[in-house]
Length: 112
Length: 115
Image (cartoon, rainbow over all chains, first blue to last red; front, side, top):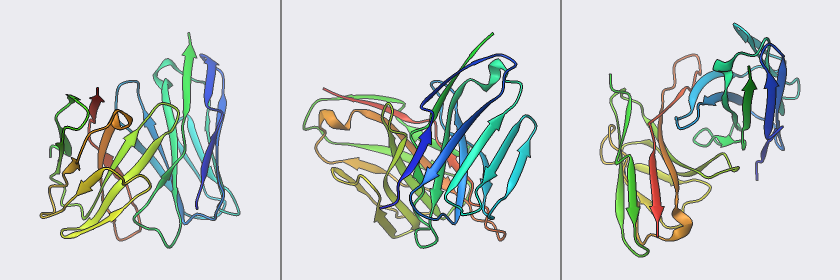
């Protein structure tokens, strides 16, 4: 079945530094979404990517969908303490529009 | 709009007890789903519904039942609680715009402890 893997599981970042988290699928995806969950909170939708090679930016966050539509990345520049949380990717295939498979998430800790 | 609401926020059960987790949305979304979240495992899909009267199993459906009699409500029933069902449960609803945007909106979650 479809597997979505995220690396790294943990990311310890100094405030002001950049970092990237990666999402890899065992199957070709029709689209991929990214969510952020603050400690004790619920997942909040960030963005959706649907096109091969697509790149989208939200202020300091850059999201990319791979050419083969089997991997994605989230790059954060100049990390701030407000970036603390767990970032999840979730993908689905064309024939499973009812089901998004979530990765295990990357937990981000920011040191001032 | 209240968005997606879940009750209760916290619940403690004894093994073998049954209970229903409530979920409601006021956004007229056709698609609703239930996930459980365990440490280090992300969110796993339990059941989902693509509209009133239509439900289907997700990744981890055993021990849970759902029904969808209205667009707004999607309750999750634990038939006979087990310690392995200790988790945080999230309900989500999803819109689907004409341009294919499938934003999922999550409720605040229910923390369940089964003793």
